[in-house]
Image (tube, rainbow, N blue to C red; front, side):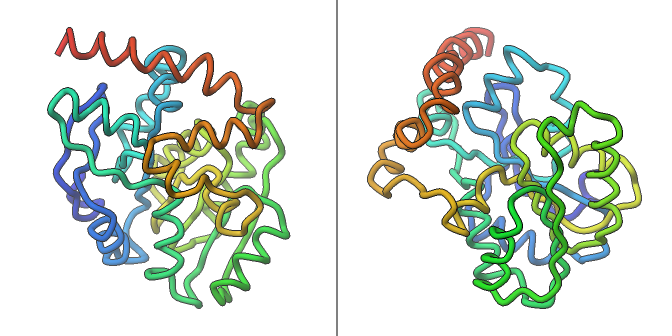
Amino acid sequence: SAHSRGSVAPTTTFLEFEFHRAASDEVLAMIDERPADAPFAYVVTPNVDHVVRLERIRSDLWPAYRRAWLTLCDSRILARLAAMAGVQLPIVTGSDLTAALFETVVRPGDRIAILGGSTAMIACIRQRYGLTNVVHYNPPMGFINNALERAHAMAFLLDANARFSFLAVGSPQQEILAYRVADSGVATGVGLCVGASLEFLSEDKSRAPQVLQSLALEWLYRLAMEPRRMWRRYLVDGPRIFAIFQHWRRSA
């Protein structure tokens, strides 16, 4: 039951997702209060990209999101659409949450598992926050479609026995894996599906300036930084959110 997985904030349904209505400081407190040996619970931070993928392409991914302990809105665009429908969605981005966790919740000796990212990135984060108990594994590209590689990644997370596991292998790989780890019934700690958040912390990538973030234009900045990688996400798939929203509004 949800209760056995720790305290849970009230939820709001929007675009078929059960978003938790908790501000950043409440989320941090809930994560901090969770006993290290409690059954594995994970946090997902859906943005426009996740919603479009689930509604248009990969409905088989729903269980991975529905099983999450906390589902937080990672997108100012989603929050604005929700507001148009009279729904209040607090914004807790994965990047801000990750930074705040390392700054205020994670203690130097906490057992931390990081899946994904370069050795240099991990060294940078370890040094920056004085972490002394970090294990790291970076699975190969496309690992989620290879049974053996998927088993390796899963074994790493189970064996790590970490208080916090950061799954930084992109969506939907990280959510699929978190779901499987939770489903194993033997894992403990908190898993965070955080995408590129660690790359922002180690400054491997730069985040959009605050003014662009507040105008819900972070996507434009990322498109300008990585046009070849991001053009389809932001120019082809992303705009489908408006049709999904209209359809949801009519049927709701």
